[in-house]
Length: 318
Image (cartoon, rainbow, N blue to C red; front, side, top):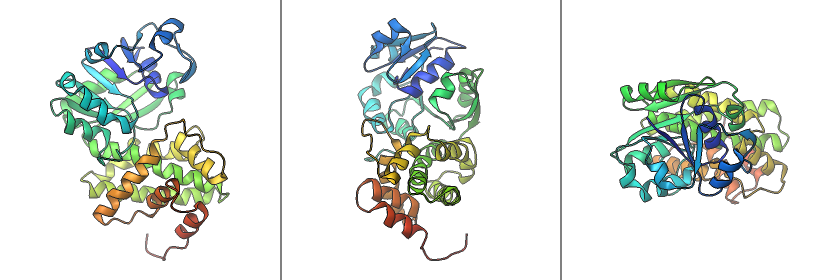
């Protein structure tokens, strides 16, 4: 069964390197494919990592669409357009969303978008604690592979497991994609906290209360809150909120320190915060940490005011 990866960013490239240990992989890039093929390196996104011979970089969309199984490693805000543009060719394929976010327009996660836009495809989500550099270096981690069809999910588990990627199955696609998306919002909040000098104890409190928000929204959207206790939620939350290797945490950190913001880097939690805040308001949910992040990154409120408000909210039971 042929495997293609849509998107040659750091994570897509890292997955290609890992999967190439067990099978050939087509790595599709919007630009730079010829250079990668010649140099055997993605110098722009993942410098210092050699692409194995089993990885075939290409800029030919047709070559990607010829694959039976396609991993979507493009930004979450671009998934809908990609699926719409290629819906006919993607019908009958297995599409695995590997990006983590909620579309700001449709308020859907990437796994759900597959089912809505290409109903004739098999939809799955691959998510969990995973920095691209770690995966590319062959360091071990474990991920959640969610697919509503348990038989297909088991087949994909065997297909995509590598010596350094251990996959655990789930049938809760919505829960898995929400865990991956919402932890980015909490990570930005934790960056705010550390950047303003509030300390690690305050960060731990934000992580805990942010996790409660994640479970609250998951339940409201029909997912199993217990799913978020696993790799796709708690596991990814722990990694993303505690390391400057996280784009979302580092973005929040820059806000907190009032440094210049790098607008050239994709930070999925920014758009996701806005989307989740809309979802919460529509359903009458109280998600104060999410609202804080959404208000700060949109420029509606000052970061110091919002952090102070969080810690002066009315007292309540946990």
